[in-house]
Image 1 (cartoon, rainbow, N blue to C red):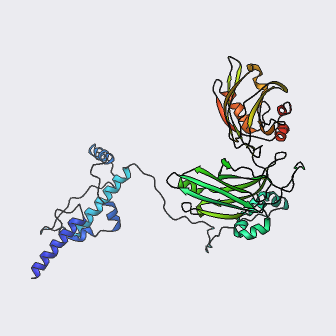
Image 2 (image 1 turned 90 degrees about the vertical axis):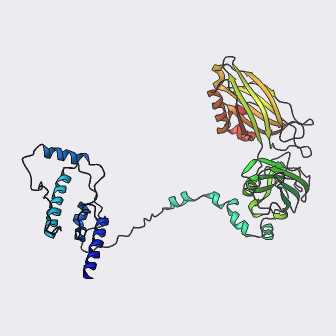
Image 3 (image 1 turned 135 degrees about the horizontal axis):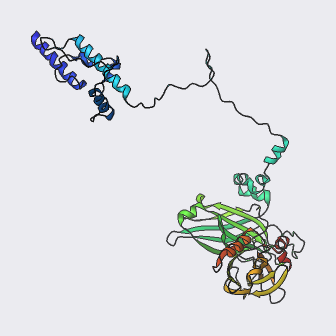
Length: 468
């Protein structure tokens, strides 16, 4: 029984040694060779499958017969076994020691690799007692000048208090601002992918305000409503003007071609404006409704109190122009393509707009041309071309004045808006259009322009003062 147990223990030792050591798997009956120290395990690790070039070079140098050997160049001692076929522990330790010294000598000849010190880095002053260092909070004391420089008046405007307005009910808003209420509805059509906005009526609108004293009727307003989906204010709709009433009934529908997901990201803005032919149009109030907060498919009707708007005057409209210069012929070609959302000049028929184009060389009016007028519209399509004789040496001193009028057969034409393009441009957008045309000859350059008032153009452009 003892013999069998010894035999099984040797077999187990052999198996354990075979699977844990790669160098003594042939004649090894003791597992003590696998229980080496940490240094021996680190050195006697598995070698690569191919012999490295530095080891081949070292062997060739040994074959050449180096006569001088250092203490580390000790040859490997042959393994000796005991008479019973076992290796003694002293022989094993000697062979292991000699193999270690041999490999160490070979490692010293191997090209060195950079050493990396991975010791933890400690910050702070080296002392017997280490104290944790906390980051200090930098505090800056502001002088009175710095304080008022940080002050932003726009944050305290009427629009900046939208959060306070949202917290109020419609009755509280009506009693606070007293601008009246607006009745409207929305409905989204999933079949045709368009949003329908119905402007129904308004009530309790305030009396008109005359900014320049030129308004004739101070008892009644001429209200109309502009509809747009923010942030796009260019593609807006406009109801008809209701004459001399503070309780207008509109009953008009407008559709916006827009996908459903995009409609949920928009904000419906309804602006009530007071029309005045002899003065500027004034904004009475506005209503904004984020469409993500309503059920568009189901639709609904709302009475909303009007709140003040920072925009006291309505925009005058936009004009789409195309410029093209031919240096060989010395011709400046101008295309009046279209206009949109022009200021309404007639209560009943909208407007009869046309465009007057005037060429100014320096401060002298040279030529005047105009388009035909289109009846009853604020979004006219012209598509009319005009050509002016301008030599190339005079092009830098030329200016084009575009003025939009509302045709009036009974009296003088109604001014709508103006822009100046050229040497004395009325703004950065106009200067950019002129510069693009100069850099690209023989190529038509199109651009939208927002119309400006006559006073604004006269203030910034001397060419505007030379025309009527």
